[in-house]
Length: 282
Ligand code: ADP
Image (cartoon, rainbow, N blue to C red; front, side, top):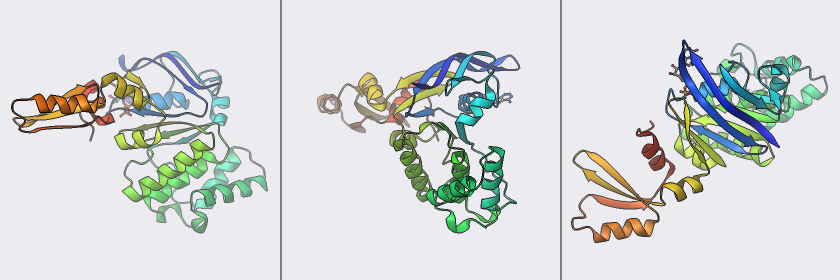
């Protein structure tokens, strides 16, 4: 079964296309990562998938529903964690979840049971009565996740879920995300962190300038672009050259007359990203 289907989607703002001829599908249970530099169109894509922005052209189905004609059914089937903190900081942790639970018409005592379960899951039970404004950034993000899960969605959308978090909190969120996926949740996350995608995602879509320029698993990317890389200092620049295997990269260095400033190593996602887009991510 397909959880997300995007066919020939275009989005234009003031006649300028910011998403162009985008097509991809996410099967149920997959962890899919959309990677790209700032301005690539990742947020616009996610906003179309979660019915916040209408596509200018093309078709999007989420959980089998059309985002244009069946927006209410789409909203019931998805959980959303956006980049900006979208919980009410002047309410308590519990009040935020209570409000969300009522919006989704979850009756009591079921509602309280679910609030308790998801607060326990994200490690916030002890902060149930705290005002959200007193929580750390990592805690706020975990609260957003608990809220997104309260109505038991089929698909979870995470827009830059760990941006601005310290390494420890980022790890903690990764564990939660990975665990949810292992329980069968389909997930789409956008990020500009390479290691996030390498660590979490089954399949990766690389976006640049509104278009999907590569789609597949990391292993497929490496098989296509090369498993080994030779990096060489050229003045103040680094030149990279890809090789089918690390052995071939090593052999290239050994055969070189002047090996000064040359090194080889296994290719990583960032190497491939730079090769494809011509720019580095921060
Ligand atoms: P990303 O999430 O990959 O950083 P975005 O989807 O936020 O990229 O933005 C893609 C492009 O669309 C950017 O050039 C941005 O300025 C433009 N854009 C996004 N939202 C709007 C809007 N509401 N009106 C006009 N332009 C927009």
